[in-house]
Image 1 (tube, helix red, strand yellow):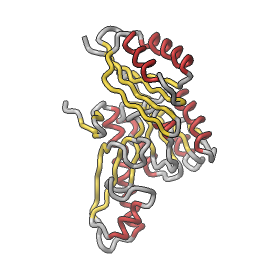
Image 2 (cartoon, rainbow, N blue to C red; image 1 turned 90 degrees about the vertical axis):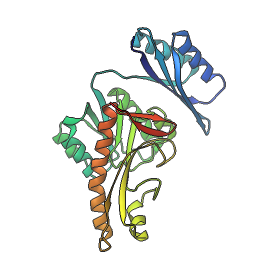
Image 3 (cartoon, rainbow, N blue to C red; image 1 turned 180 degrees about the vertical axis):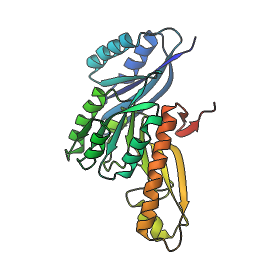
Image 4 (cartoon, rainbow, N blue to C red; image 1 turned 180 degrees about the horizontal axis):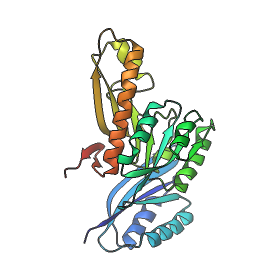
Length: 280
């Protein structure tokens, strides 16, 4: 029988006994733990469990029972179960339009539905309206409060994948840990070179002959998540910074879309912080 794999994320205030509580729960339901990752930052606990079952599992019942446990342990718990049904995608944006435009233009080739677009401002709302996709502006400046709202929006739309289409905010561990290897970002350099916000300017100043972009999964370590896909273009010595940016932004959009497509087609597997592309 084909095994069923359930991903469990646990986030909350750190204290003793949490790991044992949830691993014991998984064992009591006949599950085998295949992966367990846990982190603690400033008293915040985050854990991801991947549990496999060789018997038939009632996912709704499993979720209901683990939610009962989560209330008892005062933790925020969610489960993720891969099915053949259409995946729900959330696209996070600020005001740069090219990534979003590319994703919307090619969305029919994705094995998923763009269910909601979340913006830090309303600049790109007209693109969402034109595509008939719900747009929610979360303009709260305090990131902790903003993320509380975003978490509720993602729960409402039952989001499976988050795409950061030039989203100009840094997501906290409290958010990132809830979507392990399910948040894809695009960075304007061939990481690990030129991290941070001014990658094109750094490349221009250093006179690099090749400039690239990197799509990667998001972790709590900024710009250091597992790399999915990279691409590059040659730089002419006469290219201005603006021309490099223009070329780069077009490539960013294409590279982000390719990474989303590969993820949704279940072609990616993360092992030991490296992304492996599955063979057919």
